[in-house]
Structure formats: structure tokens, C-alpha cells
Image 1: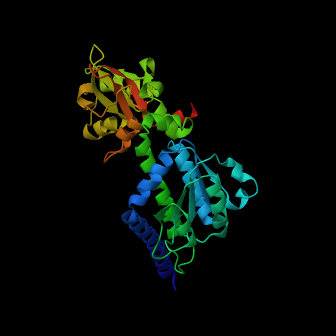
Image 2: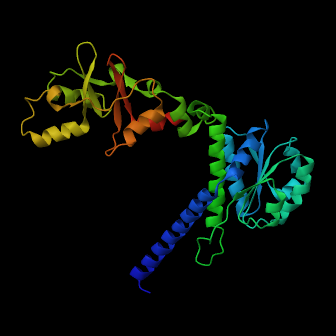
Image 3: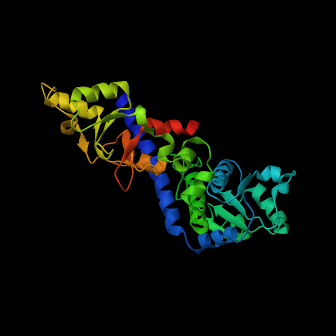
Length: 330
């Protein structure tokens, strides 16, 4: 096999793997029924935490599911099923629901736990790859994680089955978000550190540039004066305002380059002729997440936004993409 054929074979195998996993998730989504509703109600009806357990690759999935629950408003812990019977069962409070994740549905460590969990009055939810398995007959609720085949060529490695189990855990977490009515503000409180938390917690006014930090221009200012102002205050743009501070337009580095390409002599040009009128802007009270969406969810991304009061239209300054990504250090 030459190099080109080898490259093609690798790409085909990779695409086939992803398509098999996508098919597995789609099949699991179609199979969702009242069992998911029962699982949501079991968890919502209990004021305590959820215990998630699994062995091997399913254990790794279980850890992630527990972490997702915690980050979305449902207290949760991971329990290693082999360690459980050596003292870790002390994590339980009476009635704590348990989610068991198993591809085969016959994991010995999980089956051994069932009688003890009944003593703890723990309702058991199974995310199982076989509905005819021993665990399926023992648990209270079954979420169907069956796949037609694994994604690897030998149909052996837990690939599609692991992804489907993870997707079902995410589906349950999302249903619980709806059930608990978790808002973006509450989500932000659960993520006080890192970029995600900063984007939800901080407002544009917390990171924007204003006053002497910003290059300001009047509509009649010469292009030379604008370039000098932007050079002294290198934020990537100048705000064009009237005498009362009302926002009229924005001049970016790109606008300057386009003016240079379009005119052999730029000396007669003023700010009004070069600026972009009515550009995308953001309010000072908007969250950083909202500002980021304005910058990125568009055909051509932008890296700076004017900050404009509404109503009134007074320009307060600029916020840059860099400021948003730097904010997680706060």
C-alpha cells in the first residue's frame, strides 16, 4: 500500500468511527421514552446527591457524568464499585439515587452492590448496553445505551458504546437543568474560576476600556489625527462621537487599510468618510458571554466592540476579544 492509499484508508477508518458513534447517539435519542422521565423524577424528588458508578471504561464515563451533574446544579459523586464495599459506601445518605453505567449489564462489581443499595433505599438508574442483562432486571429505571456495533474495525473496543452512555448521561443532566430551572446566572456561580465562569459572571463594564485609554475622534477629524490617536492608544479601533459623546461610528485597523487601498492621497479624508456607521455594539451591562457571541457568531468575526449605552447612544469605550479571554485571570 503506497502512502496515498494508506492516508485514504486512515481517513476512511476515522470517518467511519465517527459516523458509527453518531449513529449510536441518534439511535439512543430515538429510544428515549418514559424511562428518562422516571429517572428525572427520581432525582428531583430526592433532596440529596446522586451517586454515579461504573467499572473500567464505564467508570471513566461515570466520572464525567458525575462532574457534569455537579456543574449543572445536581450534587453528585463518583463511587468506584470495587472500593465501595471496602468502606466507600459511607458516601451514601439514605435514599440517594444511584446511576450504574455498564455496557454489558453484567458487571460483577455492580451486581454485588445491588443488595446493599437496597438496604440504603437507593433507587437505581441503569445506563445499560443490554436490556436483557442481569442488571437490567435489577434496576428501577433503564436508559437504553444499546449500539449496533462499536466504532473500531474489530467491533471490540468500547467506543460507540462509551460515547452513547456519555450522551445519555448528558441528556439526563440537561433534562435536570430544565427540571431545576437552572439559569445562566446560577450556572456561573457554579463556575467561579476559569474562562467559562468569567464570561457568565463578569459584565462588559468590568473589563472594557474607557476614558483616556480609548482613541476618540470627532467626525471632522483628519485621518492623520485618527491614525495618531490609534497609535497612541493601540486598542485596534477609534470611536467616532459627536460633541455630546453620542456614538456615530467606528474606525478599525481594517478600515484604515481599506482607505489606503482606495485612495492614493489620504490627506483630504476625515473620520466621517472612513468610519463604519452603525457597527455592531454592546451594552455595558451585557455579560462577557453575550459580547463573545456578538463577536464570533457572524460570517466574519470581529475582535473589538464599541460599548454603547441604551437608550441614549452614548459611547463609553471599547471591549476587545483579548479582554474577554484575559478576564479568567481575575
